[in-house]
Image (cartoon, rainbow, N blue to C red):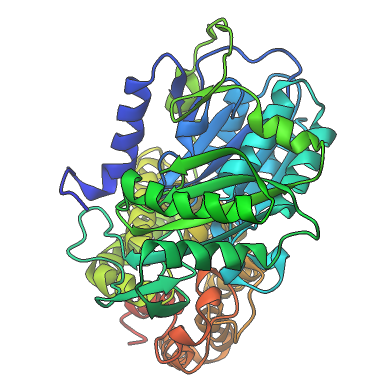
Length: 561
């Protein structure tokens, strides 16, 4: 990636800030992302898209009349947090409810689901819709990843909202569009995270990777690099394998992933257009260019959304839109929104009730423990990223570092305000989730919040209470993430730690977690982003399990060591 960075940890925030400044006529920044600069008609369904940064124009580039009402933007390749998503949704909603749209990735599913729950508790009708278009990622369509098909699915359902459809109809149209959408892609080389010294993966000269992910994941298989027409044929043949019988019309998207440029894409599209015409399939409003990228990845993907005769989905795909990165047809000028959007960005939690003296002493120890966690994560950040890059996007170390930094800052503020240990842990958990995003952010945030709920702000923290807090934290992780031992996740290390702690003490429990983390090298991933890479992860331990084991080992009390 080009070295145009300051602090890599601020890259995503600085990028979205510059984007909003460059397109102030169309978007306004809010905490967690951007919303339309124009006013939303009262009662219109608000469609809020989102995911990690690093995919521009997705997702902020699609905000504007005729397209999305808002976009929640996480860190690079990491889901925005539930708090960020809810913030964007509140700024976008205007009485018609909210429909969230995102790709089928574990972190996005967790965080957007939590945000929808928060909004429903506030009386807002909130729904979620996941895109599952990636043919190569799973034989079961419901289990597939969402990649470039995001564009066609989201554009169609946003157009339905724009014409005034109710939330039930907008959701149903979005699901129909997703069911009709298929994508297949090739990568020629990997991408490099901001500040990283090397790409997340490499493709050997003369080879190409089939079934790329858009988060820097390596491909699922490799083949010999060939000429443009042969690549076009392979992409089209792969997508047409799942075409409906008698398909005669389709939206067509040839998408560049960041380093494969427009002239190259046009060479490939020339062949695709010829083949579609020969097959009797009309290309409806085709798009060729960079729409869902993966930083500077070299590669391309082909998406088809199949339409029935006289299908309203085709009409919605063709409908006008005016967004920074997607403009079609004509949309009359809209009145600007006049409300103050600065509140969501500056809102701070209320001052905590003072904890008891015993609880404040425990809070100071908890803050020290979080500093140890931060130091441990920082020391192993590069190793954790390398483990994650084997089957995922290589950002586990970065994400853990962001979460630990945010948790420590929140803990220091709570400590200075006189909070007890329960409030300190809850606020640290919220900050970890917001700061890290992604799956690990949601899980560690939930764990700290559960521990804070157990300890409270009044009583001293006994060993029995500590054991219960650990048990509740691990239960929260299992409940939220849905993983079980053997799935190759942090649960593989967390469960044996919690089981050994009551009987054998912290040091023995940490040793059990370490052994369990090491043992994950003997299994293949069954959940999370790495599950799509099957045997590739065999021989490599799970980064989430390893980071958990490193942390609990570092937290071993001196008397137990």
